[in-house]
Image 1 (cartoon, rainbow, N blue to C red):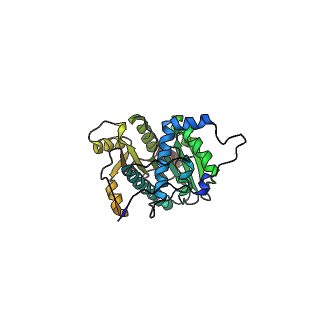
Image 2: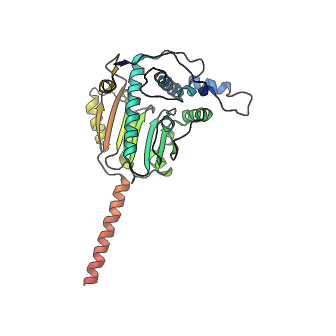
Image 3: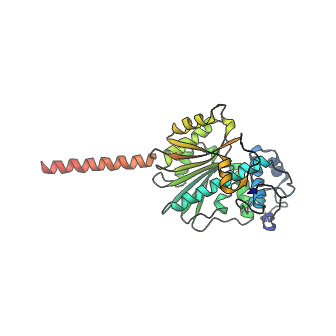
Length: 309
């Protein structure tokens, strides 16, 4: 079985190209300092460095050709092997589930990603045509990432559309609707890297999924354990998800590692929980559509009865 060991960082030549900006320098010293001191930006850069480490392995679980563009040239920090393994296993699991589900959907596909702002899935995954991708993430991180991705020539797969939703906007459901999301069409939802301040911020996400996702849709992802102090995390998650009409299953990193032939250096991840959940309810749009249809049938029945009289 393969072991997730990390090679030295290697920056592809294409990843270091920058856009020509009509100023004397590519970025100001003030912007550089802001990135160095901002915890959200640093967390996103750290995750990008883990993806780059994995990409540079001899037999990587996945390849991210854009990860290097987010990293400073002087980066040479060795990652924590346990963090690297669990992050890459979760990334591979989420990647596979997203594509498997999207390819089974006929017609227009809707993918909602809750991310740290530097997620490259819209560009590195082979999405089928007619896929609408919505990225919900911190605006300031997304702005930096968007600029760098443009600088290295990142492009969406042909026939796909991309929309960004600032997580700071508050009303995620309304913002998704304003960008064209339809609660009458199939969708797949994923979460990895999105900064969560508390349990209530995660409940807001579950509420949006519950309202917008049609029956039997999936939400997959990683949930940080520091948003709660519950001792029985499994019981807490089952109750929390079910309150929004979602049935959740906790996925073990060990199970994924075994299926991929990976030797885990640490069997337990105390920082995050990997999960997959299914929508048991019908979306608000589905319910409204059926309500209108029921009223129409009733009206047709009343008219028919009146004619018979």
